[in-house]
Length: 551
Image (cartoon, rainbow, N blue to C red; front, side):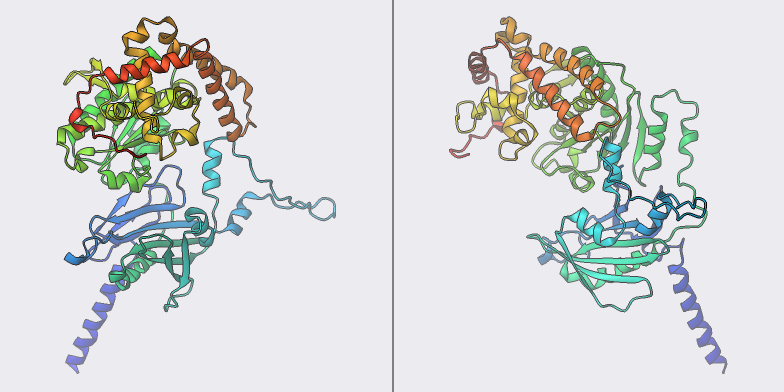
């Protein structure tokens, strides 16, 4: 009898320990707790997964989680991709309607006034676009709008608890991983986990993703995580304090932040040398942007500079494939990564130089966007001048500019194609190219290289310096664009849609280009420009490959 009691007590302790592990607030052994800073929703995840931050305009996805290496990978399976999942929360449509639509009012015994359905709002700014993007209230719409029909779902018919559902997900792509979608209905919300893995570990991760979904919970009385951000800036004399507080509150564990006069720098790398130079050079290069291209008004905006740990994290965050960095005007965010982590055959020093090229290039985009009051220049100027400033070289340990040299990425391309009519883009096509034409993957590299060389030629060559018309092209373009920016701003109202704003900006750029090149013999200019490229010294000839005889 005593032995039976001992067995019963031991069984009860095992049951209670398992229950405690599943209880909210305590992660099971080998798992970690993630808390979303805005909503307070908590979940548990395997410690083998690292958290990838979501973009500032993302209100539905709580976080993305990736494994650094595939789970239990064997030698023969080294080509396997690491497992990944995301967690999301959707408000039900009926609950949103109750919160937003007015209640019908009865007047003198008459029938309550019918509530008219609101018309679809016109997108007037990036904020409206952000609201439209996050206006999703069912998991079916989430899968359709976020993945464009590329994912198909089929019920797994697994034994689940009340309010739960689970689906097998099929991806339409050459690489076909196994996907699982776990859904929970909690009051007026839908909580979900969408994860992918390899077929070899499908059974394990089906249970793992289900466990993540079941661990999701929101503590009662939640206010906000990291509420110390406001007090951090209490006695600091910096611009854009509300913007900085918001950015700091949204930080993911493992990232560090630094404040400068014009920037809020977020880093996820231990390369302190790179970070310190970036923080210094960001501010050091600003006066040179301003000197050459004075802003239409004082700049009050503060921008985020996000330095990802490596190229994989950069791409997961949203970096365009094949790029080394990008400027997102909607979020006032400049994003790139520590290139020394993926240097390949390059030396670490050369990889750091590549990071600085990206920094000065994207920094110009950030400056010109705010300097022209959000009016975007034409692409030949915007990308060409960004590449021009990417050649900045500062004295070691100083904020003093040593020189603005040529862009080492562009020289091989232009020198290798200047005598290739099948590859060369004419001056007329270059300066009139719109977004779709400039960023066409087939010619984008050539567009960038020619835009840089044209701007460098107009600003730095002896041929341009000795020609009154050519040396005035860029100053005249910017003067006209500033006047057009001020004119366009006066035409806009609170009701002007974002699409109409983009059209006005495009027209301003086209008019400025036309003004800059009027009375210029373009054929003569192009001939001199191409001749200059042929004689230009190539300090990196060893890196230049001989072009093939095909496009």
